[in-house]
Image (cartoon, rainbow, N blue to C red; front, side):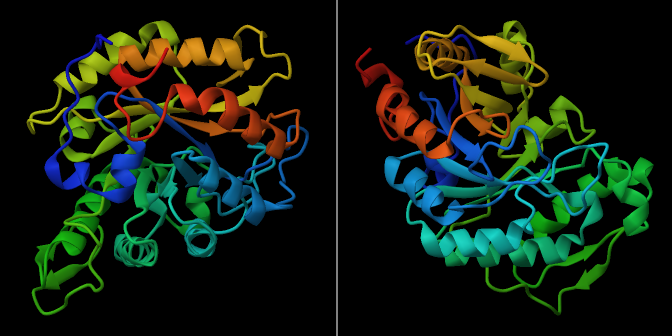
Length: 334
């Protein structure tokens, strides 16, 4: 296949990282699920029934990832509580019931959290999973939460950048010296342990986080945005990859609400930040987007009308074979 975007070449330390290399591949497209693994279209609250069994099904079937959201409160105007359970607590639980699938966050609302605690939680999960963790960080999309934490909503842009850099500093360096404007100071007398399993912890920008495309391309290890106009994807990915000055173009993925229609021939239907589609059209859509440079799709199945187990089984049988993990797209039988 001929990519329509600048070549994606992963840095050596990330190409060898268990989770990163499973989710982001130079030639292929992968997909995973945003927790919880159930449809709850008419309620803000999932049931979490069979979530352990469904996570194991996703793991054993060969899906790339399971992603946790950071939703500390129920906001009736927002209408969705995600998986309800704290993301890092849930990650620790899933670490014990899965073996291969990557576990990540989409994303921790960094301006509302203490970066050093996020760093400690992240390397802990990374160690417990043997390097199966990806840290996705967002700036949050619920302004009502900021007063509850006593944090200025308008300061989130600067808090995000400074918190992002602080996490990198303490997870990648021993006894670092650093002075921050919005957080604390380290004078080279303290060291955060444990360190990541690999050379460093993969860090992903989720959403725009109120940052420029250039900042994301040169500071993050990947970018996961929301579902955008599919016609704009090729140009967006070219612009994003071209903005990198590190020598390695960074992977791009998107998250979307997702409902798999029972009829496999159902064409693509677009809704608010989501899609409804049959498996045949889905395979064709993703083949095209793979050519355009999309590296990963994170599926939020909240609007799902069918049992999640049925959809996981159908996706594993009919969709996954077209996008096998670890095999270059050029070698996949069409």
